[in-house]
Image (cartoon, rainbow, N blue to C red; front, side):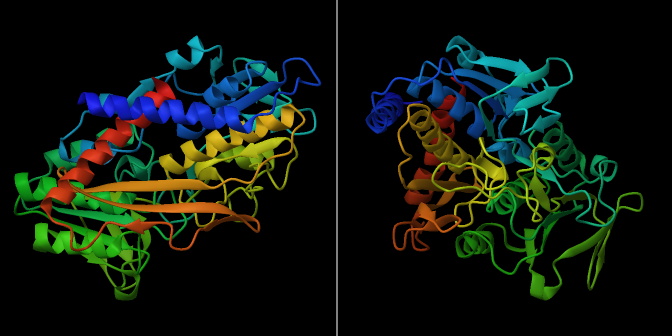
Length: 425
């Protein structure tokens, strides 16, 4: 990366550290070394663990994460057109350990909010004074008839980066020229609103450049989606008949799949694709339900100021699992929420009241490897969740020229390098 980007990263880190310090009062703890357990080592959980310990070195932080390495979703769609290796998406937890965070490679099986313990198969029970949950999403295996763990071996979802991503890429890569790929996009809410459409773009890019007789059909359970005008303008200009989008009103919602017969059903049609990427409905990870922090929607209602669960005391939830309403389920959001939550928890430990803050989110998407678009928003607590500050955000211009599109593609990569360095580096 050019030196100016490292400088920008350093400025961001210094500014963030200054902001954290400015929010924290100089008040001694009423107790010795509060115990904070973090479930989930993604962009939310890992960020929270590091920033809480920096905000308050007196806190004992334990992070529970099943994998010794984290496989990041942002930019993973580039794996699906051969632009990136899956290994470039993998990050270890050495930096967190070096800062004094105990990283437990284990599965959080259960939470007892009364006894204040987390149960794991290898470590046993781990006690906490405060629990931070950033477990991400689980696929709702009951949400789409015919789609289950076994079906995902034939029709991969690849919505959790890792082996499923590699499986989908292998299927696309080995498909004959002239084959058909079907991608199904679910109804809201789900992780990363523009994600299916960036994925469609990357797959279409590979097909057009490497298998020009092939076609991608996007079957969508919605008529509107994030950055729709920008995506569809770019698709028409760049991919033409290679990519076909079918919205809800035109029968795009997938109602069932049959992996054995390799069929995908909508209300009006049946497809038998060579490759199918089925992105099913989602919900908060199962541990959220076990902890009693998920409601009937499958997601976790929170206090938007402190991120404390509305259902369980001393458990805070952030990132994809939480109900943040206007604030999208993205890595950028999880990272921003984690920093604010760390500040708020440090203040609570020091006997200070929480502060109302605003948060920002920016979602970059690639339409080709060198064509980027983005949407940004600023959010504040409002009612039971977050509301967007009117007029404070925006999307890329429809009239932007090639230089702007190329710059936004660079910004997407620079952002990924910056955030992964901040969280895992």
